[in-house]
Image (tube, rainbow, N blue to C red; front, side, top):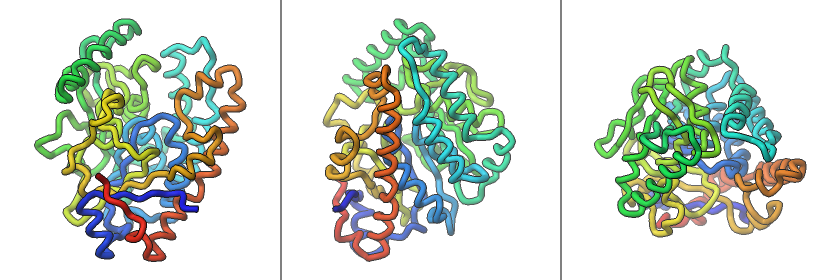
Amino acid sequence: MNHLRIKAGRKAYEQIQAGGFSLDRIGTYFGPAGGPRWLVSSGFDLTLLKEGLLGRTLPVWLVGASAGAWRFAAWLQPEPVKSYLALREAYISTTYGRNATPRTILESLNAIIDSYIEDDALSFALANKRYRLAILTCRMKHLTASGRPWVQKAGFILSFLANALHPALIHSFAERVVFYYGSRPPDFCLRKEFRGRFIPLSEVNFKPAVIASGAIPIAVEGVRDIFGAPNGTYRDGGFLDYHLNQDYTIRSDGFILFFHHQERIVPGWMDKRHKRRRPPESMLESVVMVHPSEEFVAGLPGGRIPDRGDFTTFVDDPATRIANWRRATELAAPLGEEFLELIAGGRLKDVVERLD
């Protein structure tokens, strides 16, 4: 049974059909937001990480919002596989009771980050020669920056209505702030269509930036006044960059690798209910997207990918949620190997589909 589907943008598809795909030509590996859905990407990540398959010739940008940023922060650590596994275990085993508050949830996120990123390892992470990290966050504006839930909700209702009128209006409610590690900012930050700021990562702001990228609006208290960046309240980068919403191309003949948990690409968080919203074709030309097949998803516990709603569904039975999530990661473990087998066997061009 084929557990993967591979889709490619116009340019990438033509290159794959011509036999031009190579892991050494991947300039960016993108990780989307999506809460616990990232767990099905763990087998894919770990295969690439253990085998050292990315960044062998030139450094690779690891770009992510929320869960994507959390995953990739592990890649820069002195023992990346150990750190990644520690993240996965801490994430799965964390529980929230009915009385959890935005403040207590933020504290639990801090504990997860501390479980796999050691303070004395940050200098090593910021000297990594193989990987470059770009963390997508949002500095909230006006009502959406409030710490009061009802005020924040009002702000997000207004932002939803504004986004429905025109996607550009969403920038009135949040500013994109990219925290990056590298000798220079990532290319997408320097393009004329980029809207936002870019801030160098340091040992002081590394953890706050990672935490902020996953601080889900309303559910989690925002992170205030991150060092080196403009003062304000920082929240989930998925608000503006839920899935692919930038052109992450590094070089003209390069690929953007994207392991996704689903077939649909949603630009921003507020676009989820707008079924016709998708990134512009120009952003997808060099993308190679890998996502689980319907057959694979049907074999997961409950026939679906883990999601944030499981915390509520199993609030009184966390052991079942934890068991389901662990089982999902076990089933997802071979996905990276399946992808490599397609490449090694020359079958990638036979299974790849156009990303339309």
